[in-house]
Amino acid sequence: MGKGVERRATGTKLWGFWRFLGPFLLRSVRFLVNALPPSDGASCGSELHPMSPSSPSPGVLFLAPGDRSHWCVVAYWEEKTRVGRLYSVQEPSLDIFYDLPQGNGFCLGQLNSDNKSQLVQKVRSKIGYGIQLTKEVDGVWVYNRSSYPIFIKSATLDNPDSRTLLVHKVFPGFSIKAFDYEKAYSLQRPNDHEFMQQPWTGFTVQISFVKGWGQCYTRQFISSCPCWLEVIFNNR
View 1 (cartoon, rainbow, N blue to C red):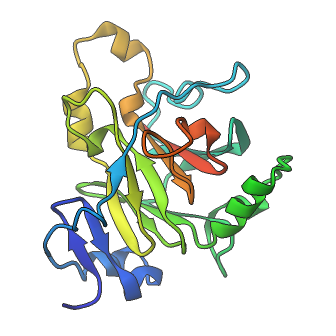
View 2 (cartoon, rainbow, N blue to C red):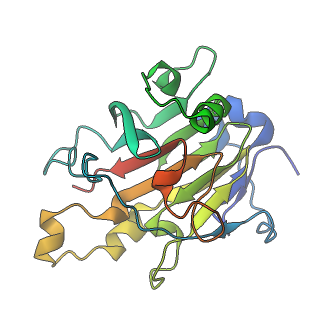
C-alpha cells in the first residue's frame, strides 16, 4: 500500500509522508482501503454548547445575508473566552497552527491571550503544526498536522436521525471530511421561515486540540476544553 491513503467508508484518510506537501498533492495520492477498526475510528460524546453572556452566539456576527466573500469564518477559543478576531477565509485552503516554519495562514501563536491557566498554556504549546482546512468538491476536509489528536463535532458526520451529535477523534496524520455541503442542505428546512432568519448550527463545526469532550470524557462541553476552534460556514 502506497503512502497517502483514504478511508472513504469512515470519512478518514491517512496521509502520513505526504501531509506536509500540501492539499493538491494529497488529492492526487488517494487510494481506497478498508474501514478503520473500531479502536481507530473512535467517536463518542455529545454536548450542548453553553455560552457565557459576553460570548457572541455562533454565526450571528458574520453570516450576513447575501455575503459570499468568504466560505467560512474561524474563531479561536480558550475555554469560554474567544481570543483574537474572527478569521475570514476566502482561499480554498487554510493552515491553522501555533508554530509552523514559514507558515502562512491563521497563526494562533501571534494572538494575545490573557489566560494564565497552566493547562491552556500546555495544550497551546502542543498545537504545533495544527490543522489544515481544505474546501474540496465533496466538502470540507480537516487534516491533522499536529502530533496530538484533535476532536471534531459536525452535524454532517452523524446519522440525520440522531438526537445527539458525536465527537469524533482524529489521530495525527489522519483527516476527516468534517463538513458535507450536500448533507447540510438536506438537513436544513428550506421552507422554514425561522430557519431563514436565524443562523443554524448545522453549518458550524467545532474542533478541540488535544483534549476531547462529551460522554466519554470528563469535560461535557467544548467550552471546558483548553484550546478549540469554531468554524462557521457561509450558508447563503
